[in-house]
Image (cartoon, rainbow, N blue to C red; front, side, top):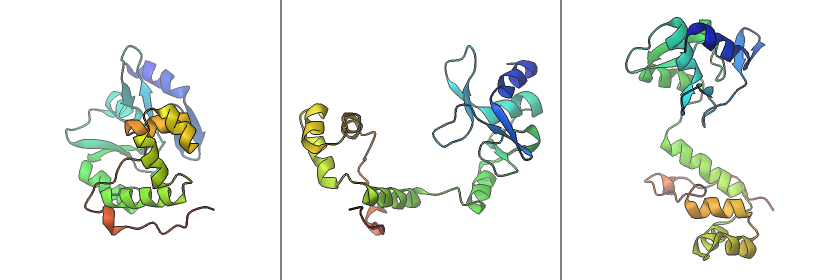
Length: 172
């Protein structure tokens, strides 16, 4: 994609806020700006595409980060290519980067707040069909499918799993 087409494409999907240009289009699973390029059947990261097209090539082993710290900013003046280790350090300073142990702790806390108990999850997994699991447990059919396929409520088989216990009381 040439520079002019990229600018036109992006201008329809950004909002000026303060000194940043915030992306309001599609995002990745982690909340970073993403888009489908015309003619390409895969999602590309917007900041990476902007840097490569408008600023210059991205060296191997580098990632594009924002100097302002805003996750959805795509302003060219705020983009910078840095080594992955440096990007992780910057994210850790902002409190964004977390490792597997932190992920497990967060998951356990969320599960403790949920109305879906581990017994209900086990019943969903043991039921012959998702529809029967839905009828027996009252969990939505879509969530039953997600539990049965492993998209939700994945087992926490990790050496860190036993270190954490949910600290948030279950809702009544």
